[in-house]
Image (cartoon, rainbow, N blue to C red; front, side):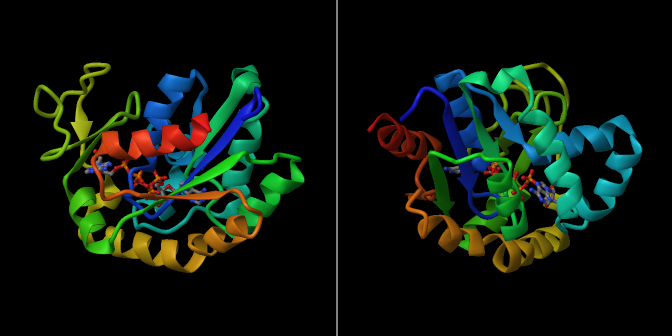
Length: 214
Ligand code: AP5
């Protein structure tokens, strides 16, 4: 892969996109650009954009394309992305993928993590998230050392508003209707790599690293 590595994580809610993006970012020394984390930070800051975004996110709906495209465009201007980046949660609609194309960005690889829906629902119900540094845990598979305290930054971990059952159902519907078409969009361009996300987090990382190192 070229010097500037441009990766994208694709997959349904709870597939492990954030978990893997964080691991890859620290191994490869390139930033994770997570639209979900950026929107949650905006919500926490109480900005007008954050309040509007929260109305969609908390119910499990996608935030309008123009809002998300705007924040990603800003991030991609940062000097931090000089050596590459990992997009996590973007693009999430065909319109967003076309917007990325129109910025002249060609992804090296789209990492598509697939897991059955019943497993996903269990994962999301047990997830705990740190709103300060973005780290994620699971009460059974990946607990923090001290209950409700982030191992990385010591802040409190919480259950996200959109990890409640009704919002999870809405998110799965949004994935099937709006995001799953991106699988064919990127497969046709020959840049899609499929991964079985039902393996352990280490197993998924190893499979991804072997594709990246090829
Ligand atoms: P976002 O934060 O992107 O949420 P998501 O796509 O629904 O993905 P998740 O964060 O829920 O899951 P993940 O795949 O990252 O899994 P994780 O690693 O955490 O977006 C939230 C909202 O923001 C959206 O609903 C929307 O409203 C808005 N938004 C964001 N981007 C947008 C966009 N581009 N356009 C419009 N709106 C946008 O893992 C899940 C759990 O499983 C964790 O507890 C983890 O510890 C555990 N786990 C991970 N891997 C494994 C494994 N292999 N085995 C067992 N457990 C595992």
